Amino acid sequence: MARFPVFFVTAFVVAIALIGLALWPLRPVSMGPVEARAAGTGLILDVGALAHIESADGFPVTRAPGPRGDQAGPRLASFSVLAPGARYSKGARLWLGPKTQEALIGKNVRVTILARSIPNTPAQNMAFGLVTGGPVSWQQMAVGPNVSPLTFDWPHSGEPIQGLAFWPAVEGQGLGIEIMAIILQPVSKTESAS
Image (tube, rainbow, N blue to C red; front, side):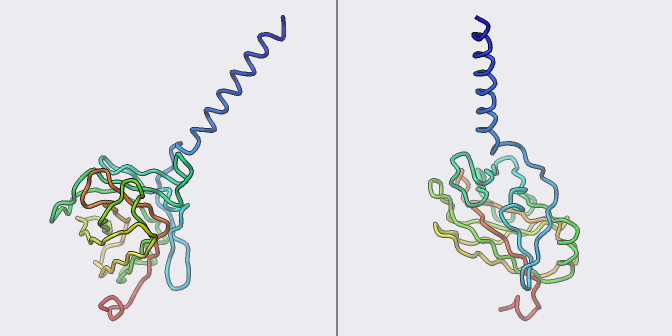
């Protein structure tokens, strides 16, 4: 008879451990600023850094590997349409650490985002902007089902780049993208004009 309660206690502990293991990918992640890693002539934000993208109201973020384990990077969706001149709209954000900000200050920046549209809810166009303390100017680009580089050129504004802003689908409707990496590259004025 003494073994009977031990069995139920052990089964209960195992069940709780399995539930905790299943929920582990959904745990909250610290959303502090991230530092980019030096790579060649630029700086790279890999999947580990991209796990720190902050969601906002109407802009959910699912971190890799996702609930089904099929994600190579975070998935971002948008339930709001990007209106023309929406300079104060928030979008999802990734905050940059002081060393990364310092490496980019006073320079034109080329931002290359390696991304694709989400297979079951594909975005047609995404928008991207730099967070510098004032309103965000959004640039749009088409995104497809295959991972491809989306390149945005930004002239320096004299303000430090505090973070990156994402509007995963300018058309809203819960559509989205998956991001694999971001490359930040300081460029000369002649390079950014081309």
